Image (cartoon, rainbow, N blue to C red):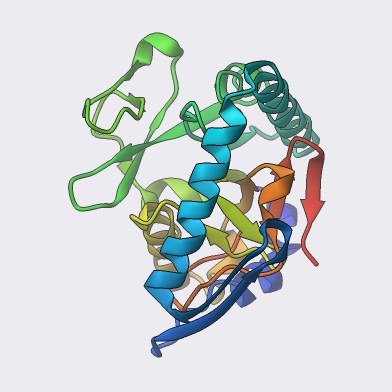
Length: 252
C-alpha cells in the first residue's frame, strides 16, 4: 500500500477504532432519518435498530425496478471511487464482498469492480466467527458453503485478516446503517469488527501506529440508512467514508 495514502488518514482512522478496556452497558441511540429512538442496553438498542433496517430493506425490495436502479448506482459510484485511488506505477488492491439480494450493490458490485483493480479479495466466514480472505477469480471461483446462510464465498482456506488487510488500499464494508461519525451497524456476528481489530493489532505490533499501514474503510449503505448515531462500544470500528446510491460521503 502506498505510504502517501496511508499517512493521510492515520490519525482519523485510529481515533475511530478505540480498543479501550471499558465496556458500555447502556446507550442512547437516535436514528432521526428513520424515526427510530431507543435508550437502554447496548445489545437491545442494536437489535431494535437492526430489525428496523432489515424490515425497511425488505419493503424496498418489493419495487424491483427502483431496487435494481439503486444497486446499479451504488456499484457504479463505488467503482468510480476505486478508480480515483489508483496511483501511477502502483498496483491497486482492494477487498469487497458478494452482496446478498437485500444489500447495496446486489447483482452489480463485483462485476463493476473487477476490471478496475489488480487484486480483488473476498471474505470467507470461518467457524470461529472470523474472516479469512481469498482472491476473486470470476463467478466460477465462488460457492455457497452453508445453504442455511446463502453467502457466496471464494473456494479455499484463504489467509487471515492480519496477513491480508494491511497490504490493501481499500476495504469495502457492508452495513445496515452507518452514523455520520462512521460507526456502522452490522448484522450482529461481529465478523468485520474482529477482522479490522486483528489487522490493527498485527500492524501495531510491527509499527508505532496501527492506522498508518491500514487500508481505508468504505461502508456501503443506501442514503436513507445514514443515521445521526448508531449504538456502539469500544469493540466497534468505524468506517472512514460512506458510499450510497448518491455517491461518496465524507464523515461529519
